[in-house]
Image (cartoon, rainbow, N blue to C red; front, side, top):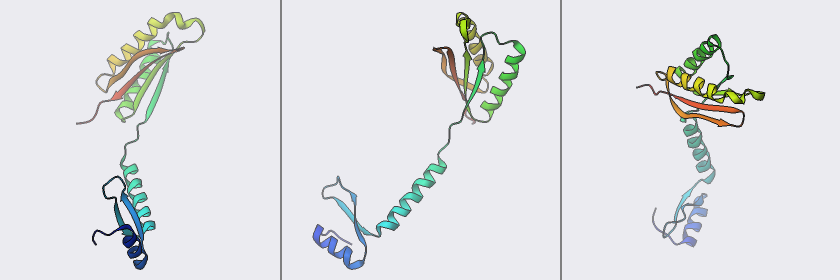
Length: 146
């Protein structure tokens, strides 16, 4: 291989039965290779697929509370939240205010902050409780294992 003018490179690629592929168009002069283009595309797709398989997928689990959720229901849902965080999933805990229950938004915030405090061994708060329409939402990310 070597450095050839464009016309000569195209001719050489045709003689060999391959394609002239521009690898780096921004370089000066542009970098081209004589390769089988279909094989090049196949290997590129294969590499992308392998990279995609290695990428971690983020799972978000949701837990819904009401502003007046009683202790038994709270404990039951907290156990599920612990399990989700132990399994490595993010947790989206929210309090849904129906009808006029929006007047209890302070109760909802207290409930979510209590949950965050009790789950601090399993995860850390990614987003503090925030009111969005009729929902007060909080995100908790699992603690990474060392």
